[in-house]
Length: 235
Image (tube, rainbow, N blue to C red):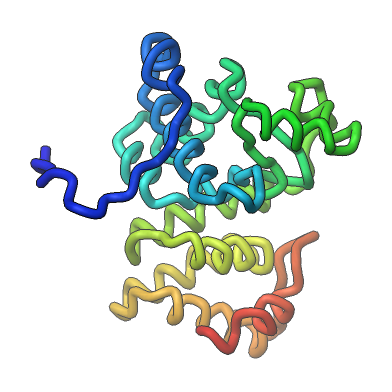
């Protein structure tokens, strides 16, 4: 365990409800729930005056949580989902379904502001936020690829940032999963461990064809050319 050097002059402080240090600290049993609860409260405090919610996607890409829960059974992504689910079940956090997938699942603090924001949502969103049964989400295959591309990146390249996570999500939706795996393998084999290189490989296969000489795409997913239009210049 690395020794913390202590708080320096000018350190900023985060306002948290007193119950966090009393009832909740006493009752929360898992490290995942505790860390997810504290992180959501802190991030939303930093955003006060802006959006009252935080997407689950943002938490899954959060560097602090991914490192802090990296040694949990099943890995950090599973731990974050479990921690969030426990906090929602306990009532510390509220859910707001604003769209499909985990990017459309917003988390709010169960305080006056969060409840007011949820009450202003459409009826379908309130039903989801209240935990009522909703239709199964579509695109589970793409979401699975999205999680796997996060893991591939961290295993082969390095730590994931929220900004890059958006590009990886787009790529997971735009390209067939076997392509993504093979592109990462090429980056490792040629010792070019960067997302820029992986993206260029995928771009080449899209425009020139891969193996069979014909451009390909993820079934029922976004167009790879649209991904290139949005991110090509920054690669």
